[in-house]
Image 1 (cartoon, rainbow, N blue to C red):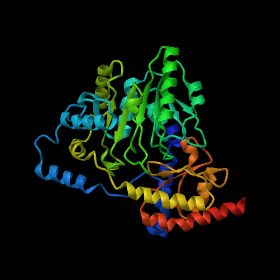
Image 2: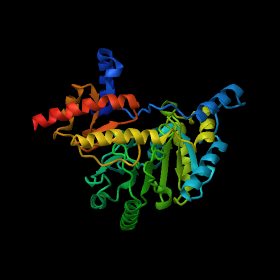
Image 3: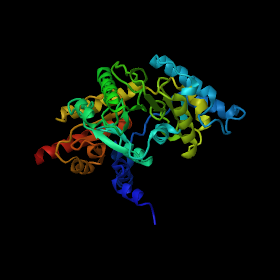
Length: 396
């Protein structure tokens, strides 16, 4: 009666939501203060005051036409402000015509894939990866090809990348800062990827898009500079959202920016606008387009996330965990203390710790912690991690 593909995908879908639902069950039994939920990347921090004040301004003043349909690409003045901000950030000159406002980064990725993919064309993703990528690619007839990481750095294994590119490769996805590791790909790594793509495009006579998924591009620590994908790659399409940088995940507001250096750029923009409509998004939420146009250059307090990172990271290292220290986003991706990460996550439930196995991100043997939880939750959870580590040592 139902779609067989969807029913099958339900079985294989994100374990993150399953763990979140387990948290709901545990909270009812033990009380919310005694359950330590690190599953979803759902920011604990409230949006900056400027966002709230700007929202109030538009609601109270009720600018004429603000709630009506507009061009499927979004308001022209908003796209112009996004283009100006990106031009300043990247040194790549962008115009409003290079921007489509979207229903978050997920909406952006789906209109990109719908616009570029033909049946059975391949999209390369780098493990560990955001778990929904394969579903988005499959939505539009594509096939996912996974490139393994350098396990010491969690950057892509470039030799594996070379071997995985074929005449059917249509795009690669770069997610930096990365979910689930928090790793920022070094500029030299990205330049090497660019050189590999140029070599392979020449070999196969093809064009390969570089899709940069950047919901965490404002969450960067320790003075690290985030390299610009638009500057490094000619065929770059950048997708962003304000879910993390402005703590607005429920508002579903983001954008897609396409490099003016892409061949047939005008046709690509027409395709993105068309698919934004025909996939049912129609246009990004009108009110929040106006709000982010005035607030996109501010962020939540990144130092607060860095403080949370440092508390958890230092505690786990002290307990004997190994972990690449994240330079961005709000995730830790430590190695589990037993070989089976799924069993490790089950053991954690004994202490009301909700974490996510690395298997779902393409890296078994690891687990993800989303430290966008409150500071109180993080501090209260430290003894639970200590007890879990003790259990694992006794097993070993």
